[in-house]
Amino acid sequence: MLKWALIFLVISLISGFLGFSGVSAATATIARVLFFIAIVIFLIFLVLAFMAGSAVL
Image (cartoon, rainbow, N blue to C red; front, side, top):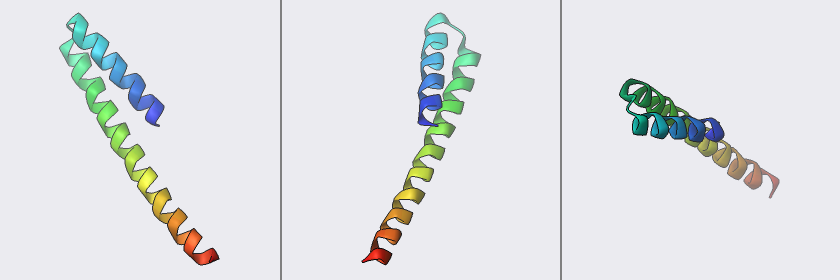
């Protein structure tokens, strides 16, 4: 998912450089949403890993 966020970020930067402000804003929003979803999933898995690690000990 982080890969897709980076792809949309690059598309946003290129389209912003070329003057397509509508496309740039839309892809920047998609990249931001995907990035925050990836962070939330990472934090959930991090908490689950700590809980599983403490259960083994």
